[in-house]
Length: 399
Image (cartoon, rainbow, N blue to C red; front, top):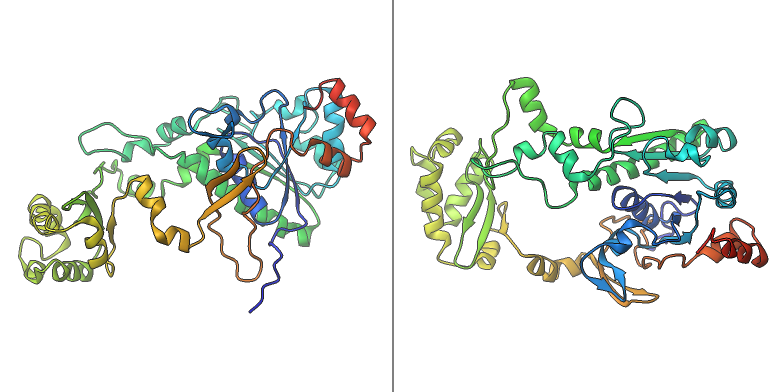
């Protein structure tokens, strides 16, 4: 059946002041969904991640490329009055504004929510901050690992007898980005009936706390700190990583039927009725012995072969980044894209995970170079003439 081909947010315009991960990831998803995202960047270097360490493609940072596909980059100094006038022009036709400055900063330049809402009552205004827009912590800076530490997230992650560990991926930023997209889409839907925009206040701290999930409830209801268990689980077995002939496999055998099926798959159906392992509590109490017996079997073959043999069970090989991204299924799912970047040439990037049957996303457009769309956006959207644009460049208001 033919699709409409129209991405779900086509016709929505976003003015994006955000930098680093949470805001840019949010607006990248909106861009994939068809929104026109105008990324406002400092003419002097742009988004902080453009200068990030690590691999580069044609001089462009892998970090910036991860979170900024499909956007239009405008190099604009909004700290100057002429720059603020341009922002005002862009907001006239905008549906959404996204910013992740510290609370109070937008007000200095005239684009805080109160000022903008009076002129543009239909605008949806998303603020991302570390600790929210109000309260005694609102002026603090915040970075993902610190929020993992302060929220209790680190306390449940790591080896049983070791210190709490942070997640290597910027998990709080990532989840804040996803919540931001959900909030913006909900506000856009609400606007269809209310006719009004609104302010969305998203804090990394709040996101981290809401992400504690059942671990948070474990303490609130039971009164005890959940125990760290490394790759295992303090209240479930076999639920951990196991050695094979050439590396490790992870198995999450969470109920009685799965355990019975696992025993059969490993060639030892009798384990399911062994008094040491018959019930979950028995398996937890005798975890070291069960692990030893399972690994004796698992070490007879490779993690890849076991992955195939146990495909009907929650089990899979622990892969390196190369093994994971070279896996054929990644390409079959359409998760690897190659972008034709204007200066870096062809660059591989992980694509969108959204699959709409009628309004497919468009995750094929590359990330922009700094200021790539300045003249186009100022001419077409802000209504400035070539002469006016040249004057702004002369004053170093635009790059």
